[in-house]
Length: 110
Image 1 (cartoon, one colour):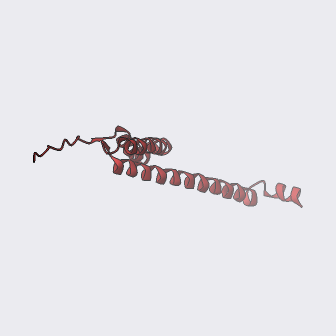
Image 2: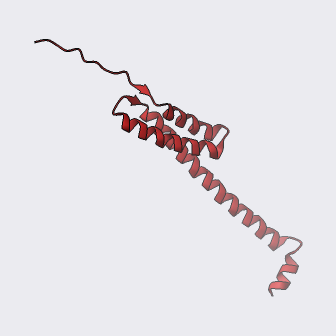
Image 3: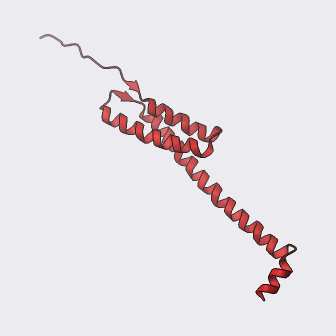
């Protein structure tokens, strides 16, 4: 019986997964919204590429880390927007209630 040597193809890392991780990190370093968008887009492209390669392309954990960082960045961005809106409404309400125009606004309302 003759043994056939198993030819194992070397696995390469997806460039998209590396870009996803870089975008996720950039989201917290200096590009708050755009880094998260880049991380999400490239992360999903990487996952698709890895799935279609049937094992010849790796980097799924890098893509997953980029996706997690991207979604966390999007969540923090949405939370920041909502808190900013609430702060502005509170500021405007405080100015109306206690500011120089309060007597004028109260005379219009009543």
